[in-house]
Image (cartoon, rainbow, N blue to C red; front, side, top):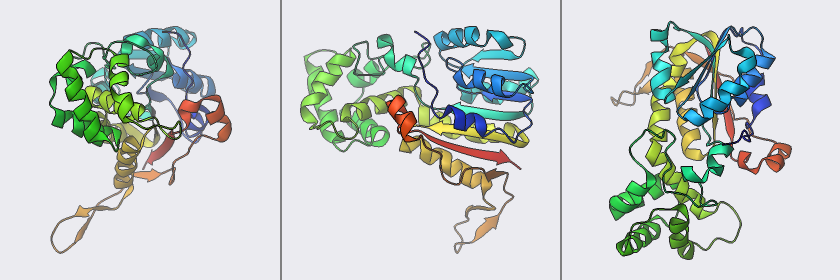
Length: 309
C-alpha cells in the first residue's frame, strides 16, 4: 500500500475546528494520517491526538507520517464504534474535536487483495478489518438469492437488484465465484450502463462492502457516543460518501440539536428535551469543481459538523 490517498474536503474539515480550543483530538478513521497531520500542523495547541483505524497497514503508514509529533500521538487499532467508547478506560473522558472520514481510502480501493473495486482483479474479500470472519465471497456463494437481493436493494440502491441477485444465484451453480473480475463479468450483461452516472457495478460492490463491514449499523451506533464524548464547545465533523451514510449523519445531528423527542404516539404529542449540540453546518459542505476535477472520487462527499452545547 502506497501513501497515495488524497484526503477529501481536507481544508474545509480542518477549518471547521478553527473556533475550538483544541487540546485533545480524535481522528476516528485515521487511515494514512491525512487529517491527523493537517490538524497537528494547523493547531499546535493539540496536546494529544488519538488515531483509530481497523486497517493495520494504514496505521503503519500513519505512524510514519505522524512521526514528527510522536510524543502527542497514540494510534489504536480497531473499529471506531468499539474503540471510541472505550477511551474513558484509557483516561480520556472528554475530547475537543473528532473527525470521521467514512470513505474507503484510495489506497484500499487500489489494493487488489482487498477486493473493494471491480477495476482491479482480486479476491472477493472486502473486509476493512482483516481479522473479521465474513467476506463478500461468503455472501455471494452461501447466502440465499433473497438475502443477496435485499443487500443490493438496501445498501446499493440499484434498480435491478432482483435481476442482479438472480444472475448471481444462477452463475454460482456452475462453481464458486471467488474474484472481483468473476463477479463483474457475471453482472455486466444485465446492466445497460452508458458511461453516464454511477456504474451499477459500483453500487453492487458498495452494497457488499457495506454489509461485510456492517458500516451503517456501526455508524448509527457510534454517533451518539462521539457526541457524548465532546467537551462543551467541542466539535464533531463527519464526511460521508453516499446517501445512506449522509442520511444517518443528518438525522443523528438533527435529533441531537432538536428540543423535541419523537412523537409519543399519543395524539401526536411531542415531548420536550434539551438539545445537546448546535448545527454548525445546516447544509452539508460539498467539494468544489476544482477538487472534483483533481480527485473524481470526492464528487459524492458531504461534510456535516456539530458543536457540543
